[in-house]
Length: 219
Image (cartoon, rainbow, N blue to C red):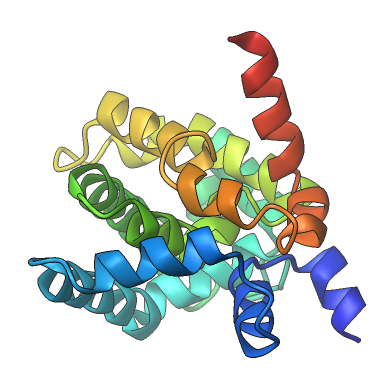
């Protein structure tokens, strides 16, 4: 069962937790993490993460939208149908005749707003280990949950124009933020490099290992 979830629903944090319990985390990782825990400002930065996470899990419309991203039918709608509706706006009126479907549109907008705030938080964070852990916590939804989620993430990035019709969202800024959140070379590189052996199954099943290799080859 564990192998199934690691292959089809790849998350890195459970692998790190299991390795910590088995005392398999490298000394360099543990010492740098311990050093960050003792630095001034760490507690405040961690509380910001807790607020972001609470906002993410308590927002019902984001919850409906991420269920959609994960391949579930929500309000009798699948992600493929939702894509077609956004790509063919003439169909939107008919699609919205079903109760509650408007919440998927609102959920997408809320997800985009969250992505902007998460990107801003990670960019300003001065703690590389915490930054990497926070990225790993949310990475599944930004394309690092395997090939299917990578495809969904690319579609989300291309669908930015629809959300940008809301004047509160800058389409160019949002597209750049989503690109950064998809890139493992940017925010989580320090803890990933230090725990590459522990995270081996996730690096392979999520495609992150391949992304990192491609990035290094392009340098």
